[in-house]
Length: 420
Image (cartoon, rainbow, N blue to C red):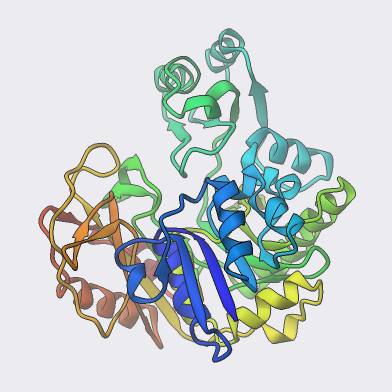
């Protein structure tokens, strides 16, 4: 089979490495890929949002399966365009991808179908938004309505910060047109859990849970990032919590999307908060999370390609999805200054025999050099989380590039939970 993976980050590298395990895979193309992905796939210089060129490439190269991984092309309709040309695809169409493409849509969906989430208000008028934050309880969460590379969420601890957040998003347009509308919601407390799930629109099969580390600095301080590391499984996500989420969140969400005529097929990501009033949805993503994918897929015992093809055919079987009873830890190595300003072009040295997923690197004169904020993710698996974390940091010590930065406390909160 010839496979095409749209995207060029660590998530896509993890997907490609997993797909390569299937013996029927002849060739994998990455559009655009990156310098590190080039070791595992043929990189093609076509941007992830250049849908016309993506479709032309798929048709001209007789692609058997296209995997659209990032949020932007999914929301823009890449899957719709590929399917119009008869290309098998993994990922939701644009009607379903709106579950991530518009936070206002997803919040309204949850309200309509009684799916537990934080209380909220939506505004497309900045003056009314500012009036609201002058009187609402604080802390409060201010979110840009549209896509913002995982950074369009501001937690305001004070009223002044809430005013600044609204101005930053709506007046300064820090996240572009994504900030033409904001969702202002109740601040929830409790352990956060990420649960990726496979679904064909009828059956939903949660993957192993994970815990992301969004803040740039140790101790969960600093700016929000796309993710500085993650561990799996999440120790707070017990069997009892999982069953409650299945009955009150996962199945109701799939049913709600079907009732709205927006059947979701692909990977649906549930960002959850385990509050004292039960699990609640913080956000949905219409695709594999990054860097959650880098710990979830290494634990997947089943064949990823077979699962993707079953989903395309609408025949997903829960029993075909199995995970190893182990733990995984991923430490993201970034360029100093990320997520604001950072330098590029530094040579990277790293061991070849490790699970290292390259996100922001390019090939220059045949050598790998840094080209992004998040440069790579180092993942290790082990029987216990403590061992996985220790192994990941041991491997990190064997990777080097100038201005390298990484958090030293990935997995610390999970280990404090007291489970394996």
